[in-house]
Length: 334
Image 1 (cartoon, one colour):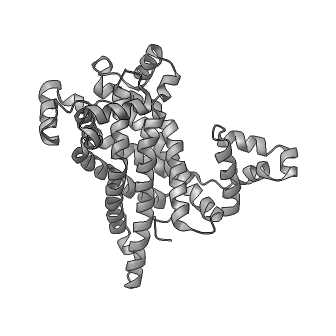
Image 2 (cartoon, rainbow, N blue to C red):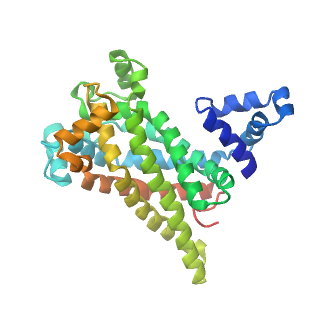
Image 3 (cartoon, helix red, strand yellow):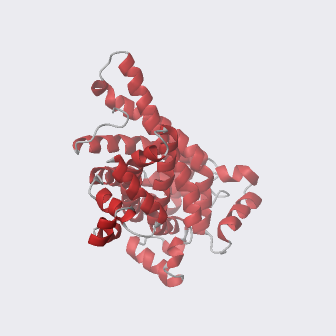
């Protein structure tokens, strides 16, 4: 399976715009299969992609991001209006409740659930598929394999998440979009700008999602494996403590993910709320010049630590639960 995954992934990296289904259809052409090489490998790899990783990833991401929407709303508003919400997360929450009402804390729930459901399915699924591929390509180097797999997964997820994140942030930060559900919001954005504008924040999205994916996926894998190894050395059954391992590993992963992706998260928020059209580098320059230099990229870090740790801890535990319900082993236990 590793060999088949490897050939398939090489094709995906060379032609990222082609879907798995298109690759499979192309590869199953008799002439291509007979000729061997990449096309035949794509046909073989398509047969061994395990849908269970994609299902588990979608369920855990949609659930965890959905239930933490109120925290995300407060964090996003703190980043978008630091001059108004400058007294901490609790004070910001109370101000929002008094000024806009409780329903405001659920702003962007639809785009969040749909967007992160799709993003999570691809991120977790692609990451799990890519790990053995990269290990095979780099002679079994686990560290390199995990990092490269997470970079690829983060990039794929970023493309899928762009339109949803654009809608979510506009609903939270732009009064003209307040109260709009996902489809009307996307239609309004498309009408005011263009369809391609929904992907205008792709570089900002990559600046957040790639470090976030590395911090989350890799550290969760590594820490969980270390914990299981330690418990195994003490002659304890991993089955008995798998949930404790998942929670501890997930919490540690949340810290790595939050710190590594905080500047990208700030860039992403500024990109989607801004109508200046300055582009990726322009947004970075504006943040640096108007928000206090380097420290401006860490605006709202406290709220985001609460937000991210809540999301990741719940997300990765749910991921492990769903994986096991579908017949897959817990992360780090094999």
